[in-house]
Length: 296
Image (cartoon, rainbow, N blue to C red; front, side, top):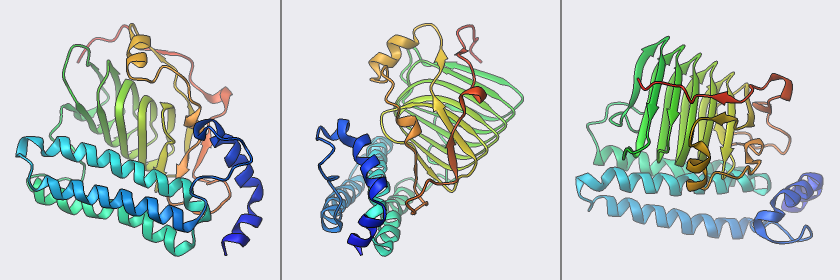
């Protein structure tokens, strides 16, 4: 079966090898590192065991350390899901479906045990942020603060301007909004958005249940989308006083072009996913300048 898939999609594999050659520091004639089921399963099993071990340690954590511990676990899960997405093209259907579901099921159960007071499925409802606003311009500057996480949720027809650096950003239930952010040193999680424009820089981004929205990104790993449609991607194009230094300190000063290498986590076919596309240059925003924003 693997031989048949390999022959059928040789062109796609050749293109994939070319794109990955710089990252893997190998020439274009070499094979992708996980282009065999056994090698992939071994890597997956080791990563999954590590995550389960971290989860077990959570039960011994002091309550003040639980959130920080879960942030580390979330990052590990993101990497594991990214591994599945990147290698799904050669895996048998059963392995694809099984390993897509397994990385994320266990942590949700354990997180509820550790923090039962949370009533929402959204991860950090108790973090600082903007919530329940309509038709407002919302501004926040993280410079000089120690905010590790920030949430944007339940906004309608708002414009959000975030300057400075933050570790994690959570975006939930936005409609007809525009969101501009400086560097996020960890990950961005976007869920349930429609008719929005996002200009964001981060090491990782995962987008769930997004509809007819545009993402202008600078990222260090491939964006992941799930249950989304009509989403378009373009390069990051934002400025304000001090952003160049902040991007450099966050290791986001260089354009990686990964914004255009999107993994649709639920699209298992070798052909291009119909759920996302590159935003045509003629339709893109110009340079967005939020320098004169006043904090809300």
